[in-house]
Length: 112
Length: 109
Image (cartoon, rainbow over all chains, first blue to last red; front, side, top):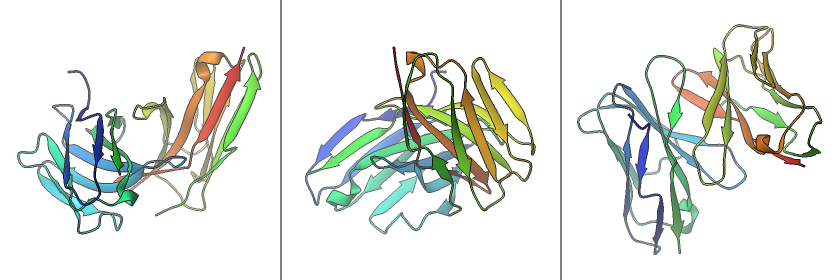
């Protein structure tokens, strides 16, 4: 297992377009998280899955954002009608048990 | 969201010096983690502290969790240029991690 994999690594999109990111967690990890990180800030929690169930969503996750984890394995994060304020690094992390979050390398989104 | 105040925000020191990064909150955390992040990469877990008063050592890095489990510190002894990076503390409360804003450390030869 090579850890948490995120694709694409970079995405440049025009304002108003839709984008989708993918996260492949460590296979035996049942919990998967999405975080967003802007320059000069720590990662901020967006949403969390236990297996295929989305259990929590942050208020940061507007109705333009949707996340899925259809079979309890990989997850996707879609942003509709992107805005310049959506530009950030989107990080995925997975965990089994209580400790030891493993983060992916992130997807850097730039909205122009 | 439970706030974690991290200080200093920036630190520039010379090789061989010692440094301490502080992480403070008014909230109690079930555990606290320290991460290091390189440019363009995700954070990498360094350590998890769970018990109030706990001290953990990782080579030249010493991590301490406050007795009341509201604060933590990271001490680096004899810093090296390879220690350069962005360090975050993150408190575990419930289902998610709450991150501080980070400390950007630059160690020059």
